[in-house]
Image (cartoon, rainbow, N blue to C red; front, side, top):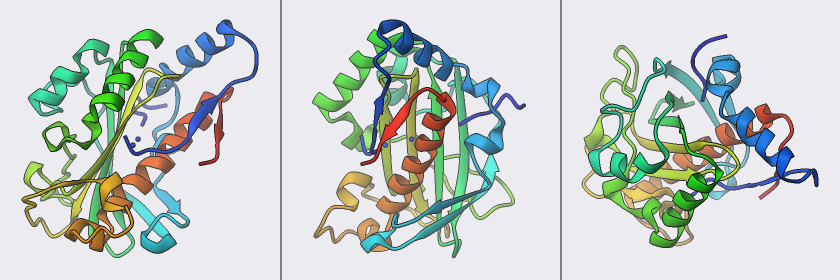
Length: 237
Protein backbone atom coordinates (compact mmCIF):
# COMPACT_ATOMS: atom_id res chain seq x y z
CA UNK A 1 0.00 0.00 0.00
CA UNK A 2 1.15 3.51 -0.60
CA UNK A 3 -0.08 6.80 0.78
CA UNK A 4 -0.97 7.74 -2.75
CA UNK A 5 -4.11 7.37 -4.62
CA UNK A 6 -5.72 9.05 -7.28
CA UNK A 7 -11.14 13.56 -12.61
CA UNK A 8 -14.00 16.52 -15.24
CA UNK A 9 -17.11 20.21 -15.20
CA UNK A 10 -16.34 17.77 -17.84
CA UNK A 11 -16.02 14.29 -16.38
CA UNK A 12 -18.97 12.17 -17.38
CA UNK A 13 -20.94 9.57 -15.48
CA UNK A 14 -23.12 9.51 -12.40
CA UNK A 15 -23.29 7.44 -9.24
CA UNK A 16 -26.05 4.94 -8.57
CA UNK A 17 -26.53 3.13 -5.29
CA UNK A 18 -28.74 0.31 -4.20
CA UNK A 19 -31.98 1.29 -2.50
CA UNK A 20 -30.45 0.82 0.94
CA UNK A 21 -31.28 4.28 2.23
CA UNK A 22 -29.16 6.92 3.83
CA UNK A 23 -26.95 4.50 5.74
CA UNK A 24 -25.67 2.89 2.54
CA UNK A 25 -24.98 6.28 0.97
CA UNK A 26 -23.06 7.34 4.05
CA UNK A 27 -21.00 4.14 3.90
CA UNK A 28 -20.15 4.78 0.25
CA UNK A 29 -19.09 8.33 1.03
CA UNK A 30 -16.93 7.26 3.97
CA UNK A 31 -15.31 4.47 1.95
CA UNK A 32 -14.38 6.87 -0.82
CA UNK A 33 -12.66 9.16 1.65
CA UNK A 34 -10.21 6.41 2.69
CA UNK A 35 -9.03 5.39 -0.77
CA UNK A 36 -6.03 7.69 -0.78
CA UNK A 37 -4.28 5.47 1.78
CA UNK A 38 -6.14 2.14 1.38
CA UNK A 39 -5.66 1.47 -2.34
CA UNK A 40 -2.31 0.84 -4.12
CA UNK A 41 -1.17 3.62 -6.38
CA UNK A 42 -1.07 1.36 -9.45
CA UNK A 43 -4.74 0.59 -8.95
CA UNK A 44 -5.72 4.25 -8.86
CA UNK A 45 -3.13 5.59 -11.30
CA UNK A 46 -2.48 2.64 -13.63
CA UNK A 47 0.85 2.59 -15.47
CA UNK A 48 -1.13 2.38 -18.72
CA UNK A 49 -4.65 3.66 -19.39
CA UNK A 50 -6.59 2.63 -22.48
CA UNK A 51 -8.91 5.23 -23.94
CA UNK A 52 -11.08 3.43 -26.47
CA UNK A 53 -12.86 6.09 -28.49
CA UNK A 54 -11.47 8.90 -26.32
CA UNK A 55 -9.67 10.84 -29.04
CA UNK A 56 -10.97 13.27 -31.65
CA UNK A 57 -13.53 11.65 -33.91
CA UNK A 58 -13.74 8.63 -31.65
CA UNK A 59 -10.12 7.61 -32.18
CA UNK A 60 -8.54 5.36 -29.58
CA UNK A 61 -6.01 6.69 -27.11
CA UNK A 62 -3.38 5.07 -24.90
CA UNK A 63 -1.76 6.96 -22.04
CA UNK A 64 1.41 5.98 -20.18
CA UNK A 65 2.10 7.18 -16.67
CA UNK A 66 5.42 9.00 -16.44
CA UNK A 67 5.34 10.34 -12.89
CA UNK A 68 3.41 10.12 -9.64
CA UNK A 69 3.69 13.04 -7.24
CA UNK A 70 4.27 12.35 -3.56
CA UNK A 71 0.99 12.58 -1.70
CA UNK A 72 0.73 15.98 -0.11
CA UNK A 73 -1.39 18.70 1.35
CA UNK A 74 -2.64 21.53 -0.81
CA UNK A 75 -0.21 24.32 0.07
CA UNK A 76 0.97 25.91 -3.20
CA UNK A 77 -0.73 23.14 -5.21
CA UNK A 78 -3.42 25.42 -6.67
CA UNK A 79 -3.52 28.95 -7.94
CA UNK A 80 -4.68 31.25 -5.10
CA UNK A 81 -8.16 31.87 -6.48
CA UNK A 82 -8.87 28.17 -7.01
CA UNK A 83 -7.55 27.44 -3.53
CA UNK A 84 -10.01 30.01 -2.18
CA UNK A 85 -12.93 28.43 -4.04
CA UNK A 86 -12.02 24.97 -2.72
CA UNK A 87 -11.39 26.14 0.84
CA UNK A 88 -14.93 25.42 2.14
CA UNK A 89 -14.40 21.65 1.74
CA UNK A 90 -10.86 21.61 3.08
CA UNK A 91 -7.91 19.49 2.03
CA UNK A 92 -7.08 16.08 3.42
CA UNK A 93 -4.73 14.80 0.71
CA UNK A 94 -3.87 15.74 -2.86
CA UNK A 95 -2.86 12.93 -5.21
CA UNK A 96 -1.53 13.52 -8.71
CA UNK A 97 0.01 11.68 -11.64
CA UNK A 98 1.19 12.86 -15.04
CA UNK A 99 0.68 10.87 -18.23
CA UNK A 100 1.74 11.17 -21.86
CA UNK A 101 0.10 9.87 -25.01
CA UNK A 102 1.55 7.11 -27.18
CA UNK A 103 3.42 9.60 -29.37
CA UNK A 104 4.70 11.61 -26.38
CA UNK A 105 3.28 14.73 -28.03
CA UNK A 106 1.07 15.70 -25.09
CA UNK A 107 1.23 15.58 -21.31
CA UNK A 108 -1.68 15.49 -18.88
CA UNK A 109 -1.77 15.73 -15.11
CA UNK A 110 -4.67 14.01 -13.37
CA UNK A 111 -5.42 14.91 -9.77
CA UNK A 112 -7.71 13.85 -6.96
CA UNK A 113 -8.21 16.21 -4.09
CA UNK A 114 -9.54 14.26 -1.12
CA UNK A 115 -11.39 16.83 0.92
CA UNK A 116 -12.65 17.09 4.50
CA UNK A 117 -16.11 18.02 3.30
CA UNK A 118 -19.27 16.16 4.26
CA UNK A 119 -21.98 15.34 1.69
CA UNK A 120 -23.72 18.67 2.21
CA UNK A 121 -20.50 20.63 1.68
CA UNK A 122 -19.61 18.68 -1.45
CA UNK A 123 -23.11 19.18 -2.86
CA UNK A 124 -22.89 22.91 -2.18
CA UNK A 125 -19.52 23.16 -3.94
CA UNK A 126 -20.77 21.11 -6.89
CA UNK A 127 -23.81 23.39 -7.15
CA UNK A 128 -21.59 26.45 -7.20
CA UNK A 129 -19.33 25.01 -9.90
CA UNK A 130 -22.36 24.11 -11.98
CA UNK A 131 -24.38 27.29 -11.64
CA UNK A 132 -21.45 29.70 -11.83
CA UNK A 133 -19.68 27.66 -14.51
CA UNK A 134 -16.48 27.75 -12.51
CA UNK A 135 -15.11 24.80 -14.45
CA UNK A 136 -14.94 27.03 -17.54
CA UNK A 137 -12.88 29.82 -15.96
CA UNK A 138 -9.23 29.97 -16.94
CA UNK A 139 -8.35 31.68 -13.65
CA UNK A 140 -9.53 28.52 -11.88
CA UNK A 141 -7.38 26.05 -13.83
CA UNK A 142 -5.58 23.36 -11.81
CA UNK A 143 -1.80 23.34 -11.84
CA UNK A 144 0.13 20.55 -13.59
CA UNK A 145 2.71 18.26 -12.03
CA UNK A 146 6.00 18.59 -13.90
CA UNK A 147 8.49 15.79 -13.23
CA UNK A 148 12.17 16.36 -13.96
CA UNK A 149 13.80 13.89 -16.32
CA UNK A 150 10.55 13.16 -18.16
CA UNK A 151 8.76 14.59 -21.18
CA UNK A 152 6.69 16.59 -18.69
CA UNK A 153 9.71 18.43 -17.26
CA UNK A 154 8.62 21.67 -18.93
CA UNK A 155 4.92 21.32 -18.09
CA UNK A 156 4.40 24.42 -15.98
CA UNK A 157 1.65 26.94 -15.42
CA UNK A 158 2.31 28.74 -18.69
CA UNK A 159 1.99 25.47 -20.62
CA UNK A 160 -1.56 24.68 -19.49
CA UNK A 161 -3.73 24.34 -22.60
CA UNK A 162 -6.96 22.56 -21.63
CA UNK A 163 -8.53 21.33 -18.42
CA UNK A 164 -11.53 19.78 -16.71
CA UNK A 165 -12.73 19.82 -13.09
CA UNK A 166 -15.40 17.67 -11.45
CA UNK A 167 -16.75 18.03 -7.91
CA UNK A 168 -18.12 14.68 -6.80
CA UNK A 169 -21.14 14.61 -4.52
CA UNK A 170 -21.09 10.95 -3.46
CA UNK A 171 -17.44 11.13 -2.42
CA UNK A 172 -15.29 13.75 -0.72
CA UNK A 173 -13.27 14.23 -3.90
CA UNK A 174 -12.59 16.94 -6.45
CA UNK A 175 -11.18 15.36 -9.59
CA UNK A 176 -9.40 17.21 -12.37
CA UNK A 177 -7.07 16.98 -15.34
CA UNK A 178 -4.99 19.56 -17.19
CA UNK A 179 -3.19 18.98 -20.49
CA UNK A 180 -0.54 20.65 -22.62
CA UNK A 181 2.02 20.06 -25.35
CA UNK A 182 5.07 18.01 -24.41
CA UNK A 183 7.45 20.39 -26.17
CA UNK A 184 6.98 23.03 -23.49
CA UNK A 185 5.30 25.65 -25.65
CA UNK A 186 3.39 28.36 -23.85
CA UNK A 187 -0.34 28.87 -24.28
CA UNK A 188 -1.87 32.33 -24.37
CA UNK A 189 -5.53 31.31 -24.30
CA UNK A 190 -6.28 28.01 -22.51
CA UNK A 191 -9.60 26.40 -23.38
CA UNK A 192 -11.86 24.25 -21.19
CA UNK A 193 -11.96 20.66 -22.36
CA UNK A 194 -15.74 20.78 -22.76
CA UNK A 195 -15.33 23.57 -25.31
CA UNK A 196 -12.28 22.07 -27.02
CA UNK A 197 -14.12 18.81 -27.76
CA UNK A 198 -17.30 20.47 -29.00
CA UNK A 199 -18.35 20.13 -32.63
CA UNK A 200 -16.91 22.86 -34.79
CA UNK A 201 -14.18 23.93 -32.35
CA UNK A 202 -11.20 25.27 -34.32
CA UNK A 203 -8.72 26.33 -31.64
CA UNK A 204 -5.25 24.86 -31.48
CA UNK A 205 -6.32 22.81 -28.48
CA UNK A 206 -9.30 21.42 -30.37
CA UNK A 207 -7.29 20.58 -33.47
CA UNK A 208 -4.55 18.91 -31.44
CA UNK A 209 -7.05 16.97 -29.34
CA UNK A 210 -5.84 18.41 -26.02
CA UNK A 211 -9.40 18.71 -24.77
CA UNK A 212 -9.81 15.01 -25.47
CA UNK A 213 -6.57 14.30 -23.62
CA UNK A 214 -7.79 16.02 -20.46
CA UNK A 215 -11.39 14.86 -20.59
CA UNK A 216 -10.73 11.30 -21.75
CA UNK A 217 -8.00 10.54 -19.23
CA UNK A 218 -9.83 12.18 -16.35
CA UNK A 219 -12.96 10.23 -17.16
CA UNK A 220 -11.16 6.90 -17.04
CA UNK A 221 -9.32 7.64 -13.81
CA UNK A 222 -12.58 8.69 -12.21
CA UNK A 223 -14.21 5.46 -13.37
CA UNK A 224 -11.48 3.51 -11.59
CA UNK A 225 -12.07 5.54 -8.46
CA UNK A 226 -15.74 4.59 -8.56
CA UNK A 227 -14.88 0.94 -9.04
CA UNK A 228 -12.68 1.07 -5.96
CA UNK A 229 -15.66 2.20 -3.87
CA UNK A 230 -16.98 -1.29 -4.54
CA UNK A 231 -20.59 -0.62 -3.69
CA UNK A 232 -21.16 2.16 -6.21
CA UNK A 233 -21.94 1.48 -9.84
CA UNK A 234 -21.32 3.86 -12.69
CA UNK A 235 -24.07 4.58 -15.13
CA UNK A 236 -22.61 4.55 -18.67
CA UNK A 237 -22.61 7.98 -20.26
